[in-house]
Amino acid sequence: MNKSKQNTLLIVEDEPVNLNILISYLRDQYNVQVARDGEEALLQANNIKPDLILMDVRMPKLDGFETCKMLKKDRETSDIPVVFMTSLTDTEDKVKGFEVGAVDYITKPIQYKEVLARISAQLGLRNLQVILEQQKLAIEHKNQELQVQNMELNTFAKIVVNDLKKPLVRQASFTNILKKELANKESLNFLQEVEQSRHDMVGVVDDMVLLINIRTQEVVVEAPDMVSVIAEVRHKLTSLINKHNATIDAPPSWPIVWGYSPWIGTVWEIYITNALLYGGKPPKIKLGYDSEGEQIRFWVRDNSRGFTDNQQKQLFAPMSDIVKIETQLGKGYGLKLSIVRLIIEKCGGKVGVESEIGRGNMFYFTLPAIG
Image (cartoon, rainbow, N blue to C red; front, side, top):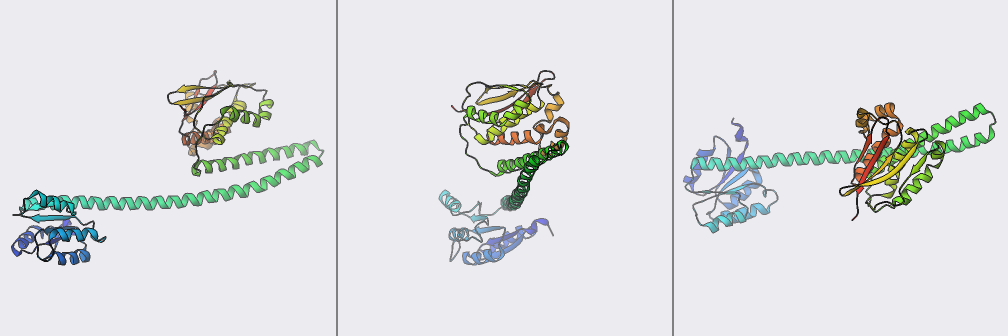
């Protein structure tokens, strides 16, 4: 059987001679069904759901225009393409045919090559539409599955975070009590190690919470008060700044940009913390900004050893490379910088680093300028 015979045509024609000619033209290539008038065409269309209807305009009982109108109103048959056959040459009749939903016209007397070409073209379009609709449904189904999976994953992550944080809080209480009770220096050292491990675990949990929020939380951007944001970060890092005997220079005022204050504070904290932990001895840190088109570039410059070109390419890497990067460059340059990238991209900016061996690093991020 010819593959094209998978397509079914419904021919609606009341003239036996024309009908026989059409059947002889089409039966070798298509599965041909017949209706003698408009009413029969409506019944046949609902029963067999043809791929295309070839219909005469002038018929008894119900003409082609009215039949086409009714086909298009019926949800079951509305998407079946209708090609009119007519001996009419009047433009108004042709326009009326298109107005009621026809896709094409064939003018009588019917020519063999013309009828095949027009039917083939319309069936090709219909088959393409069917394929596209199937692909669309498949994509929608896949998206729904992914949404369900993401919801389940987010819910699971929140449960894990909650279950982890509770014992860590209790652990902090117990270690504080033991510190007061123990006088043995070695035991106190052990407790300090336990406390540091607990602190590291809390940091991981907080990073998990932040990642979940970045990926799922819709935020309303505003104009962060950068002076207050940075002052809060410096206060939070006071003990680390003092421990490393670091100096931090910052301008007295900042340009106004779009962003989300809690997340922008996190970005500054990560950049400054890395400069404190991996910078020079002692760390000398400078904060600043400059204009970059319609965005403002904010930066943190340190006096560290700097990165090679190859190392720079590894920074701000995707999640899949984090373990390797943290092993090679340090904890602050893996997950932390991935968090920075996700935050800034969600705020409409970009991130990057400029570095040179022996001349330190400049980590930067951009945000849309206001005005």
